[in-house]
Image (cartoon, rainbow over all chains, first blue to last red; front, side, top):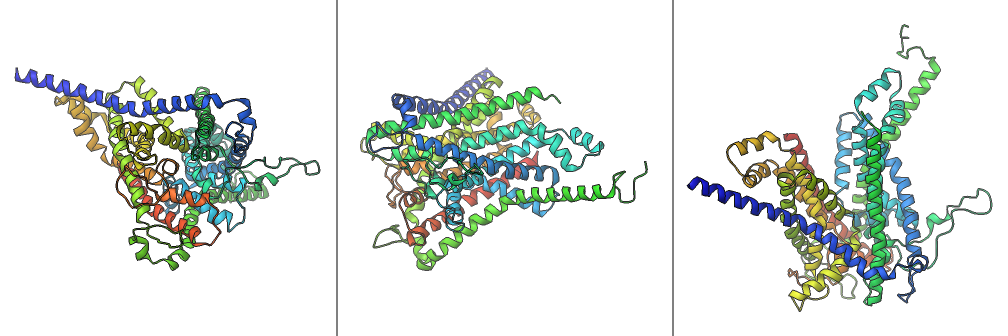
Length: 301
Length: 308
């Protein structure tokens, strides 16, 4: 009898514990839902075509995010173009080439540590080094490089995982046919790892797109009423890189600017900008999941 | 075919040596890419120290650490980092009081109780929290959480550390839960089965067997969460206010180290002024605070994965 009541009590405590677990899980999910709904309710009415094609303005109803989304796009372009070769190169080195020695250990510890450095510290690095030592100014180039350094640890780590998941038999087969190490990597390992690398890159970029702290630190402006120079020109060589050195603003900074104003109409603008920003990051995360699933289906070891 | 003496198989000599040279060059280029991470670390440490050196020539370390006021931009300047450190610690503490229990219980639930379907749906959903831009969380803290809290404490100021801390707490739940859950799931099944065989319930097994075995992995998750909370910027800059007041009361507004850096950067401070240097001194303090937890987390994680 005593045993039965003990069992019953234990069962009861066990189910209480399961309910507690469920509740804890719901904290995060409910907040996420509240955040979406709140943002959508506040900002939906402002999401018109004009919002995307107008410059910021003193009048909340006329203000838009044209310079912000153009800035975000160009900065992300520079970030991706910088982070991919360095990140994938580092991952290939660490997975395929690195001997087991102190230098490799040092690199690995560094990457792990950099992943934990607060993003605003990257902003200070960029301010001291890129803006004032290298004189790149408060430009799209500086911002892109800053965010590239910021996401480098994520890119390296995910690329390493993708490379590691390529079975060794592929490498051995290539070596057996006389391929050099680089030929093996370039023609066999990297093509198989592309899905994983791409997934990691998109996730990393979706983090970078929402970063504002390091860009505020390098001195990004929030009131930009013009677009960067176009990347082309009428004369030879037809391509222009003038836009790299143009001042910029990005979506999260535009939103921050609107949030920190006292007028409520600007808060509506902030909510609308937040919705667009959230839509961008979610779309990127969705794309990453899609790519991962696709590549997984294609490759059967 | 007999291999030639230099080991190149049947290749002509010139092609062989140029190929070797190319392979070498590529290896060096890859090593160079990998060394970027070291360069970034050196760069961060170098820039922070180099730019804050003039600051510490102007302000003694004793004043920096003990003066209870931080007013570097006023005419009567005080350079005590304490108010900013207090603001950072209070928001971090509020965030941790939220994130550690909730994150750990979530992790235990997902790893020990939840069905596969629940786990596979909830985990990515929780990880979406890390994808939400922090400025959106700031908006949420200022315009949703604070008004909500004002229903409970009517005299809560519009800017306060409580609402910022709570929102940061929710933000870092996935960091805590995801890594803790990985650690718990890595605990071998036979340990659990042994416990069940002795008649333990799921809760007893989870709390007394699985959690202690996964402890260093869970501690690593905590360290990561703490370091995130300390370095969080936009939420506090938006919702906690920007006056550096020395207070330990989360119901009051205060400024964190990160928010101070944002505040100064928003203005237009000339390069080389004491205000400009002060953000590097503040950044150095911030880096040292997070470094402690990053290193602890790295060592704990490494130790944990070695154990199994």
